[in-house]
Structures are given as structure tokens and as C-alpha cells.
Length: 188
Image (tube, rainbow, N blue to C red; front, side, top):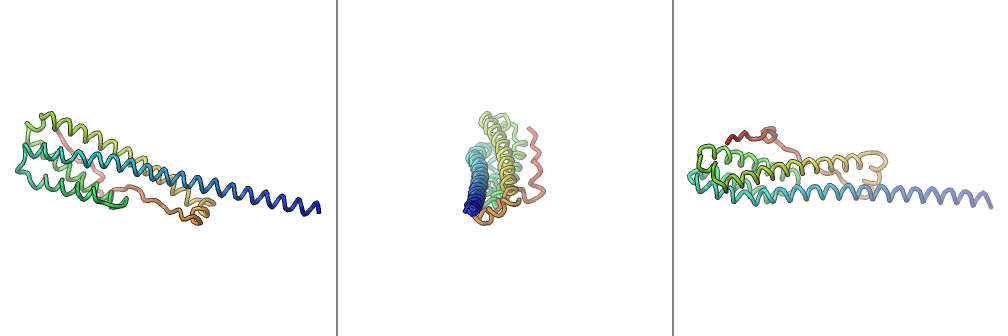
């Protein structure tokens, strides 16, 4: 009877340890998944801030360069597309198009000295530059969070728990085209 009790205690202890390990891994995966979601929300906040600045920037430029309608419309269309984009890949692509359109708009400003000196434009430009930096930091944080999460769900033995509970890989926020990786050259 003593041997049977010892065996049951050892098996019971092993089951408890296994369950505690399973709970720990599961909770760690949930924490990492939530970190990825939070990081994406931070990108979203900064992109919304960027999207909110663009109409003011376009209106300010329109007052000085209203005949540059094609460039202004391209920015507005790119903004609309970016606001409506769903998913990481589509969002990255739409934001890249918006960045290129903004670059063209800011290069257009070079031809208008009065606009370059306008206080409203300068304030908007500074705000946009600040927002672009914040977007860059938020993207980096998001991609770091995705890397930690994806690494965790791909390594053994947590990958077993991840597959049992449906934890799937997250996508990186990557620029799709090589041209998007280059910052537009704007000189004022």
C-alpha cells in the first residue's frame, strides 16, 4: 500500500507541475499577444494623428498653391486610402503611398517662399515631422513585440501550447517596396 501511495503522489505531483507549466506558458503567450495588440494600437494612434494633420496641411498649401491640384488631390486620396486600410500589410502599403504623396507635397512647397515662411505651415510641418518620428518609434516597438511573440510561439515546447490554444503568428509592419524605405528629400 505504501508503494502505491508513493506512485500516486509522484504522478499527482507530476500532473500538478505539468498543469502549472501549461498555465504559465499560456499566460505568457496571452501577455505577449496583448503586447502586440497594444503596440499596434500605438501605431494606430500615431497614424490617426498623422491623418488628422493632413487636411490642415493641404488647406494651408492650397491657399498658396491652389493650382497644384493634382498633388493636393493625390495627398487627399492617399489619406483616404490609408484611413480605410485594414490589416497590417494593407495598412503598411497604404501608409507608404501616403508618405510618398506627402513627400511630393512638401517638395512642392519649395517653389513658394511665402508658404515656407507661413507660421501655420511651419507649425504643421513641425507637428508632422514629430508625428512621423513617433510613428517610426511605434513601428519599431510593434515589430519588436511581434518578434518576441512569434519567437515564443515557434520555440519548443511553448509551440505545443500555442498550437493547442490557437495562438497564430503576427505580421510585421514592413514596407513592401524598396522606394518606401527611402525618406523623401525635402529642403527648406
